[in-house]
Image (cartoon, rainbow, N blue to C red; front, side, top):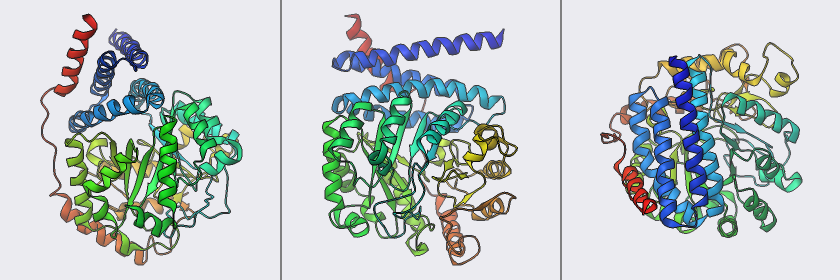
Length: 484
């Protein structure tokens, strides 16, 4: 009876969420009605996470972060209504998948919500220090294999499909791979990391038609810093691409990899102001990792710089800046620690090799073998659930208590080296010499020690008493308008 009651409750929640999504979609052109339904949608998302989240500290961080999400959505529906419709569909799918993943997780299953797939590892640029070690020659994952892989990860619980490389838009230019995938899976979101150089008018038209592809264009800071690494004129070319995509209603964002040389410039209001001014709706921050082509461990950020990034993002979020921001390392408290190893996501190279993390330069199997029925794993879900390397990754995660130091690669490198010795683990193409036992390993150890001493001083979030008041206020105001 308890289970039946729970199932019925989930179904009613699902129906209420669908109604909120459709209402927000229909009311996008009517500001007061739009406000009401957006508030309902955000409240429904909050209730969904509250019903499914057993970790009180993570839930507290989630509720604090919801305030940041609200301002981003309001800007999105005002500036990019076409993209907003796709985001609303995506959020509806996300909330339904939260229930689905939670039910499976409580039954002992591994339930990732995202995956990173490389449609190609080829690239039209040759940036120094490329973590993926991309070149103009390389591997492409066939379209049919991509479709099968996406179907497999959706069955596992994945809502957000991230496409990386290489340069993914090389595949869009050759056979429209990206927009074909987006049309085939319209209720999923496709986050695409790109250097931005191939986003011409023809590609922009197709992205505007599908709506659910979200390009994250790489920046290295300001114009002179981006051009110094990626090539003269690249920044201006990307600025025009952002404008072109905005005209077609595409939701674009940025991806910034912080190094010892650009961190201080990126952690400024001037940087974020420029990103908003040029039309970015979201942004992801990464720390440079000493893997790939000609890695330089001396460019890894200092502990003080990593702390500055974390504090800067906290202040930007609390200032209610109208842009969605994510910090791949410092947001450990928001996601409960390391997200890799199938816990929340994993990575598949263009050649089909499967890795626990996009920044872990190792692999332990191939999607082609799984789909062909070769070996002991019946499906990709079975592989991620049972493979010794993925299991070792999650076991090491469980030992980490400090969420300000979540990463097995740079915060707990000894743990990652234990994983690398597990049978079936082998070096990926972007494994650098000395990463496990040489100069790079020693540099990572020093960085881990410095961050361990610094992380304890990182800012903590203020306590939240009850659901965020602004969500209730917007819902109440909207309800009054609709009733009138």
